[in-house]
Image 1: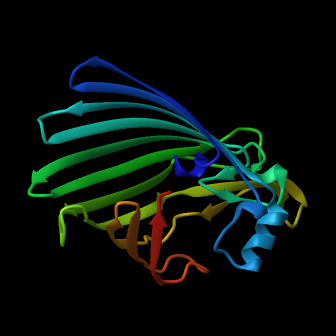
Image 2: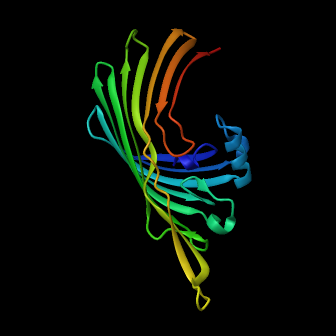
Image 3: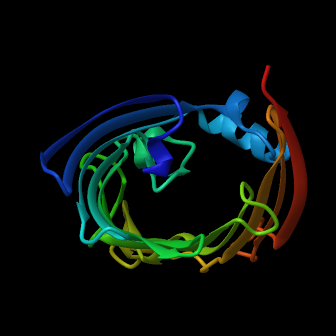
Amino acid sequence: LGLASGETFAGATYSPLKATTLSVGYSQQREDWRDLDGVSEIERNIQRQLGAREAEALTIGVEQKVTKNLSVNAQYTYLREEDAVLGAQTGSAALLGEGSRTNAVTVSASMDLGDGFSFDLSATGGATQTAQGQILATSRDVMSSAGQFTVNKRGVMGSQDILRVSVGQPMTVERGELELRSDQVIDRLTGERGVVTQTIGISTKRRYTGEIVYATPVSKASELGIVGRYISAGEIGQDESFMIGANFGMRF
């Protein structure tokens, strides 16, 4: 869903039972080189050449409050990308101009452990197929996964502050291949031509993230936040990185 979030969103919820909530949502995003933040000029220019990346998603979910302190949630997502496969584009409309379709399921749980402690856990699995009518195609589903575990503690050094520690795995292509079919010479002696299929692996290296966030009110109208974030190395160009920062907010 993250590939289609950030621009347009609409949603609705309905509770047929006191402990059950049904939800439906729609989101859409169009991202071009002007929208990219925190990237190099090389990456910005590449996106400029590829053109805008467009995607939309439909979600249907159900949340069940099992006990006073425990809730579980299941959500189905249908993602449609205009000219990409899980965010990856090409420079030719003939290759991936018709885009791809993804069906994904997310299962999550939230639990209040008492004494200010709570945790959130989520796991997502997806299956992607390219659309028909383009040169690059999938012979079988491209399988992807993502997940995150978060622990929260309220009242660390005061009654109003909160500490959040989370570890996660960003979206990883667990298994995936694209097939490129082209007309080539298959017999050099006779010059006979035929369709040749080349396979391109698109599985990605698993990355891990870690984040620590601490927020505390400074006064009735202001709040201080400190954040540290780490992400491990991935594919070429995805270097290991660490960031630490702080922000101060004031309400008028």
